[in-house]
Image (tube, rainbow over all chains, first blue to last red; front, side, top):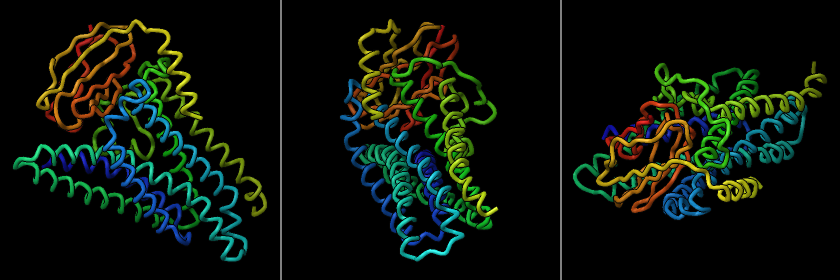
Length: 273
Length: 105
């Protein structure tokens, strides 16, 4: 039971932390509950479909379908997060400081909400498909331990959701003045971490067989499969044994989004200085 | 777009057979056989995992930097970088009692 609790808990916090950040980012945007819930719902449905077709997915594209799928949706999520940050940098300040009709505000908030709902859906899809496969295996193997392990899984979901909620309430405690800056930074790190994870799949598929040497090994100090390591992995992309290519892609995406966000927010910042 | 780029990459590398070493692992009754596999150092490696069980598994190794779902009664293969000599642990993430080691020498 403890085993399945930990496995499910791990997957749920990964998706849950992302949902928590998105909820904090969209605080005060009308209709966000609908979009975030829609994202979670779509992710759960998608996860079940992916789990059901796991075999077919593995065999497709000459055996690297799984890797291409994972790398593809991660890259898409990175693009959505980058777009959100840049869009918010452009319009966020105007929205907050200039008087606008409610109708316009809602419409503009929604544009970026769509991107974030997709990111939520992708996070739930990735982690959820593993949970679905795992729990299906538990249910299929039956036996006396089956019920115990399903109970463990349910507790894992609850605990994961609780930790994610704590993260959310911690974030919204930040004064609104600073919240924008904090969430912008969080989303930038989130995107860079996802890009680095996409690299792992491409290397595993043999698509990018270069720059694969390990840069450092901190697995003895902070293993990335521990709960803390896992949370840091989701939030900042922490890896205990990164490859050179992973590190390069991480740094590039981090710098790229940071620079673009700064660049796009500059006119507004000057105007209100 | 991303897929198109990726696909052209696959075509490129599939066309040039990498002279990689191969390791085959079998999962049965949620246990690896062999539980200790051997591979040569300093050359790219292909790991093939065959799952003879009726439930899905996830082959995972932090040190080998791989993570892949192995469907029930299915098999998958993964590319691993040229490794330094040493012992590399792997496991089935869905059945964490199933562990094994790859000895690179």
